[in-house]
Length: 129
Image (cartoon, rainbow, N blue to C red; front, side, top):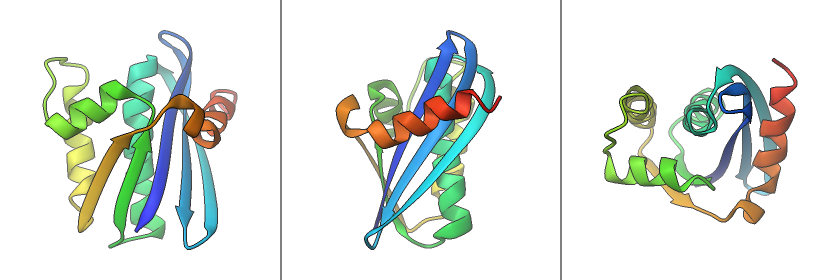
């Protein structure tokens, strides 16, 4: 099982945004930062999970994935498999599609202070736009 920490950040709401992915596997650490363009902070958080799943498909196919996010909104939407927000619905569908490639996909909420690696990566990605 691998641990995948994701975070999205936006400079403004909406504003230039980025996604940070921090992966722990077998004592190794992998870092990824992706510029996302103009998005709201919530959208960036969803896109960070999508990017995390895509990174895992490329580098860690068929692994059991344990995702961690400090976005209660994103974790709740994924766990409940439901949102009334029309902007988030296609993002939820994309997450479900990407996650279906893996034997198991878990996501849990963590406090912001436990997500500092992904946060720094997401903030650095804003400047790559």
